[in-house]
Amino acid sequence: MSKIRQDAWSKENDQLLANTVLRHIKDGSTQLNAFEEVGDILNRTAAACGFRWNAVVRNNYHEAIELAKKERKARKRSERRKWKQPYPVSLEQAIIPAKEEETGLTTITFTDIIQFLERMQQNYDARKQSFQRLNDMQEQTETLLSENMQLKKQLEKTEKRLQTVETDYQTFIEIMDRARKLTLLDEHDEKRTPMFRMDKNGNLEQYMQG
Image (cartoon, rainbow, N blue to C red; front, side, top):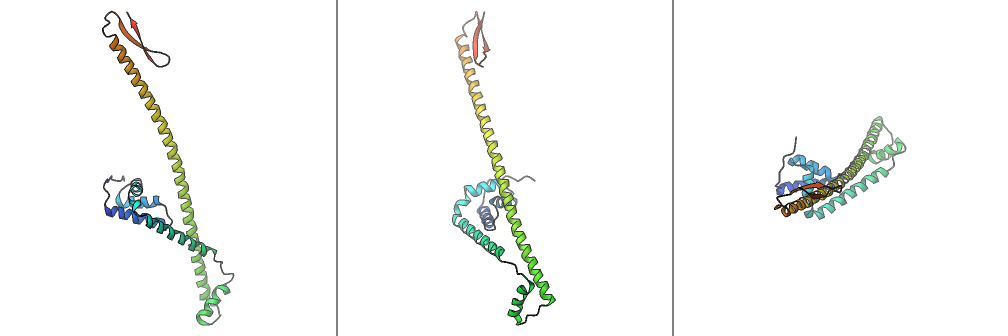
């Protein structure tokens, strides 16, 4: 389904765009993901949302952007600290201190073992998800860099084609101007008919046919 073009941005639209971008920055996501999310909500393209953010809205949120970046860094540091925490070497090391603190007893029950294994599984799942998010972000970054390179190459080709078209157009105008001047000079010559031909260099020259 194609997006419907809407030229007018309301204050509510700008606020939604700002809140979404700031949230994605804090969560460690990309601004492109934020533009796509807002585009789906407002029925606009991601490119239109990106242009609005960079041209208008961003200028009003410099402090909020810096704060969101600081929160993102703090969250990453917290996650790194969790990853650096060593796993217990044995069940006794993980369970006995907790049991002593709660009840003063050191006996390990089957329930204690199950709870320990469940915590280990939760720890593993959390770390796995964190690594997956990092991998996804890296893949998105590589994709964006690749798309950027392709767009630059396409732009260079388009600029070269434009230069060629401009050169050809200027040459055509010059040829037409010379032809017009030659026609005006000989328009009173009734005995000879002016004729034109193209030389090997692509220039138009006149010769008279009696």
